[in-house]
Image (cartoon, rainbow, N blue to C red; front, top):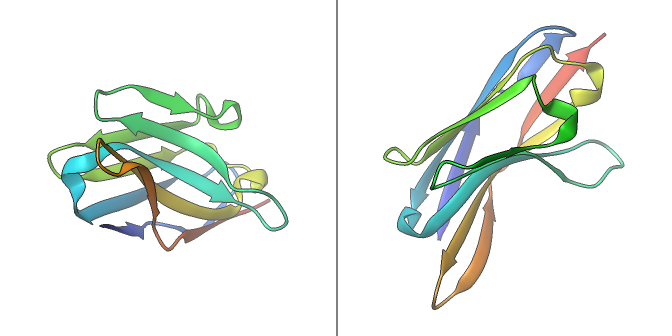
Length: 120
């Protein structure tokens, strides 16, 4: 089991910045990747950015150049720095931890979500 605690959401004007933080606890030794997803009202949850334990990162096209994911493997944290925010970035943002091991296979854990609202 892994527990994820998020912080950093809020209300910001278009063009502004926010930093989301997520800390994992529990069976963190099996974490293969951590990342951020978001879900806007009426839409499916989508990946925003992810980072593997090996340092590889992946970004959604919609946030490339505006967001930076940073992961601290030793502290089991993952942050998302979001700049030049747009109203369409408004969503609930969820921290994700993907665990992978021989016995249990792949498992995903989610944080409770943090609201990001960008006003125009």
